[in-house]
Image (cartoon, rainbow, N blue to C red; front, top):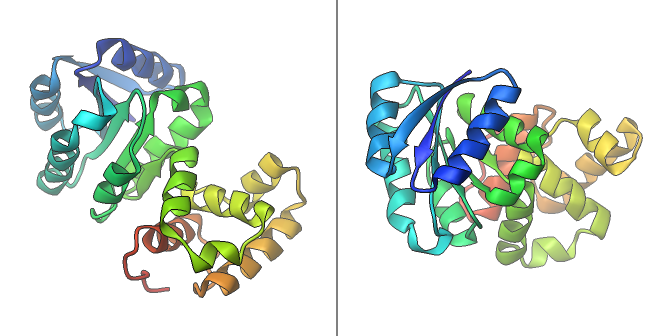
Length: 217
């Protein structure tokens, strides 16, 4: 995987670069600043470009620029990495067809989650922090959420992050058969079509959370 890393927050960019190298990625560092990141990404055409920002709540323009970059460069995924994350910006990113991601700094403490998010973005899906997904769902769903118990909510957050059944089972200390049963019950309660593919399940849950029409099964 080839990754361009840069943006306005150089210490955060350096942490992301170290993590990516540790997992075998080829890292291309952009110069200081958002314009340098854009120039490097469009010149190098990496698998994914990670742009860092200094302040999460003052960078809507960068979210919109990321969406525009993705439209202009469909072969490159784009991830926004910020000190914290904003649910409203997450909804904005979810207006794309995929290939974009949004991670807060705290996610760097969970390398496996970051790697999954990058892989999902490269494959044309959404790469989002699990806690951010939980906040998005909590702020969006009303009646649907009341149909789910605590464990089912935990499963939903992991589904939306794109994890397969065996990983969800390991994280929750369940048998895989239990997870399969829970996923079926959750999709029935939410009125979603059953699906075994993790990417399709994630898209279905995120579409519902973002208030968009559900994707076809």
